[in-house]
Image: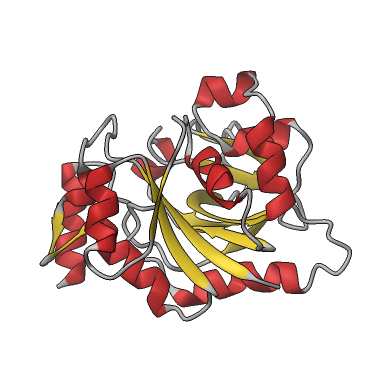
Length: 242
């Protein structure tokens, strides 16, 4: 299988505009993320795909590889699909541009999912982290996922799922980490299918896959990392980097 990593990178962000170009201990956030993906040595290629000339120049001028989006896109999967449509590739790993702490072990687990899936029953795979802090479980900025017995995703939500009506039941809560591994065909299907109501309501692109019957295999990881969504997250990332 030919496996590549693509990093979707928008300059504008609702909560923290320009966050990917912020300094993270001497290099920009997007450069740190790109270098982390390359350093795993798991991919045949690593590319940033962006709508921003500023981000494109940042990567290319520092020796990396980047692609400019031709169209406007609502989500990272659409941006990646456009970029890979004419590429000879089997599996595409989507690493979020605001996650500079992406680790090789978690990505290796995602790749193994497809190597073991001989019948091609899995359309895409993604990561989840067990969470216990009440404020994180309740936060709409934390995307939760619930899974079946085989760890296939049942639903993703910004709300608390499952709702703890019976507090005596021992329920584990999982945070969805926005790192995806796609079969190319599933990614292109997504690109050509219109957004439906669940995705539009929650503003979570992964719901489009579920609404159209795609199977998402979730892989548990212990690596929490830091997703840089706010200036406060950036300060936490700086401390962690040190």
